[in-house]
Image 1 (cartoon, helix red, strand yellow):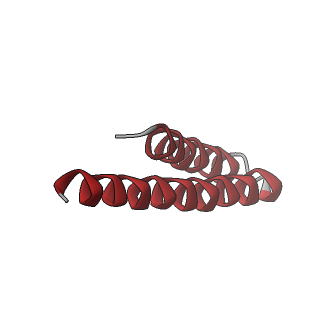
Image 2 (cartoon, one colour):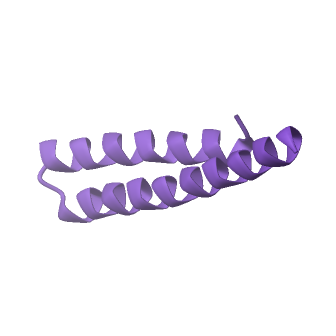
Amino acid sequence: MNKDQVSGRADEVKGKIKEAVGKTVDNDRLKAEGKADQLSGKVQAGYGDAKEKVKDAIDKA
């Protein structure tokens, strides 16, 4: 697991928490920030996953 995977998944969790808090306190801005953090985290984690697959393919070659 590389740093992009870890950081991305952490951002996803942070975003889910922000979104939940935003829903609880009825704060649209906080909900939107949470969704944005989740999306950003998914993109970063996906990038990390792709890097890991390339690294594994090179190691097997």
